[in-house]
Image (tube, rainbow, N blue to C red):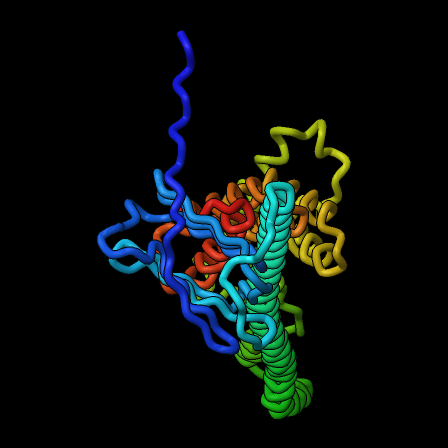
Length: 386
């Protein structure tokens, strides 16, 4: 069957207009009782106007150029009211340009459409530039927050290190004092014993002299002297007491307030060692340092600071293989993926970090905020706003 023919438009020729030296006021349609149906499509160019409200169509090839950027149009009571700003202040002889043939009309239409496309492209490019600038600002703000958090953590670590060093020094000083006191006490006891024994030895010498002069005496006196001699104990010898301490993994002294924290650290290290032993053939060449996820995290942070994002990702990957329960590893790797434009991977790592940061408590509020910011940045870059 034949295809349906397109409905011919109804051309609007009637309009009313008035002007000043700088403005033209135009109403379409201008006759009373006639109204445009629906919401009309209005197109305005430098020397061309078009109003299309099917089935009605209005076209005007203007007498002189207008400033379309400053001109306006509004719909009221079924009519379109134009306020057209002239480029040059002068009164027009007529609204429409004289002697415009079909070829010139077509050329004016094409020029107007081409200019409109170019303007739309410029606006799209400007919008893309603004969007890129906003994304860059968001990323810079995220990096500043991370840098401030990293500095805060470093300061806390330095304070803890100084505190631990002071405790070790105090412990050493106390041990030295106790050792000197223990060495001094036996010497004082020996001197006191010797001082006590000196009068006894002198009295024994006098007794022996008396007994030698009176050997003809009774035998009972001799036996009593021997018994007295044997009853005096000999001076005790000086000795050294050996002290042995329970072996510990940590170099600091045992403190009840840190027992739970130390046990948790040892448990994490045990889990990491078990994870390494599972894949010993592949990780067998690693040193003891490289098997420590905390050391690998610090190494990844250093590589990230130098702009080597791929190497930083490799360091975080190895640390996650060793211990996949540390949220900071996923957060840092998500930042690297953002820099490398691996947006889907950044979303996955941020989501994994949020899973590990449960339940939400004040201690992990900053980490959860970072995870939401990085995931939101990745969604914005992918233009997934909903």
